[in-house]
Image 1 (cartoon, one colour):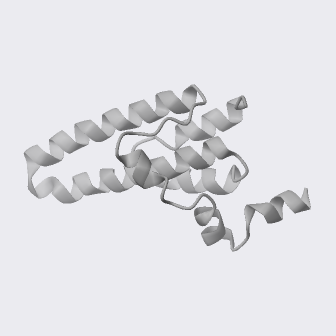
Image 2: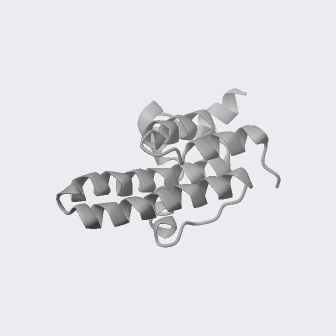
Length: 121
């Protein structure tokens, strides 16, 4: 199934470094019925956690710098996949991201199920 340009735009936003924690949450709530958006929101959250780890590892500057470069590259790979409308897993991190339940973020933030939204429309 082809994805809309809106879905692709929201998916790309999930990979903006540092701000992706906010965009992933907004995407998970605003585009809860989009499988593509949920997929990229989960991967974006895992990348944010990795980005945060680079900050913690700043006590080891060389290690932190190497991890930072890898994280930036993974953000770019994620953006390219989102722009193409594909659900391409980021190596290693993609499997970790897929362990996050699809609707967990939405339900946690709103207290509702995305199915509740579908029933109202």
